[in-house]
Image (cartoon, rainbow, N blue to C red; front, side, top):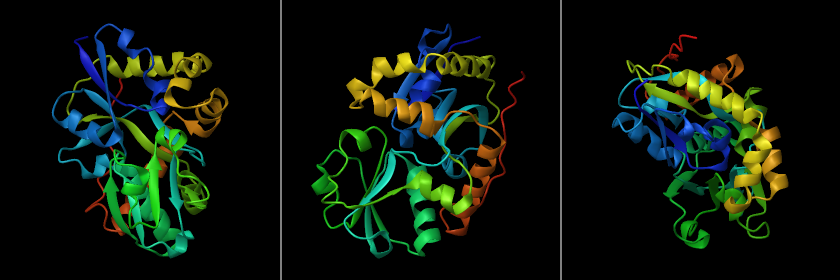
Length: 270
């Protein structure tokens, strides 16, 4: 197998999929925030990437989903949350973390379904202070490790909504935030098998992954264990694929994507 670069999310939630991959012969791993992985893939800097699922619909080039792993949740996510100063039905303006385009789209779907609202969204990248980022906004959407490490104080933002839990209530389905994707026509050779194998290896050593990485990322061991072992899902089965299609259709109905591309799976050839 020739050398392949794998684009990964730079959060704790990606480690059950990618920990140890860089020890495989012919595989290198590059990490970034979710919103930049599509460019990494389209510019040829990665053979496969753990892209936000909305990218499948908005990509300028057609993609295929490689069904050997994903980042999703059965319900509560813990790390995709809206923090609001006002009750959610009354929110007019939300500052959104632009690190994940899927979460921003899910936010709009959830608010429309639950409250029939379409608040104004302002993007930020979390480099300013939270007060600066949310200046003039009623609420803020945060994702990833920063929700644990630097969440707003409850007394300032007393109203909260976990988007994974909200999606479950709306649809009865799990949610997939990111999945392995590749450009259509790419020959990944044995890489899907390698990704699947690493997922299985990491399934059996998840507590060691938590011990090595949780504390330095701002997590307590107990919270990281709840997150990675109970709340999140890393497999891409039929219910998850159905959830992706349902989500894309909801996005289309809101005008967030122009048309719904049919789901195409990369053939892993065993």
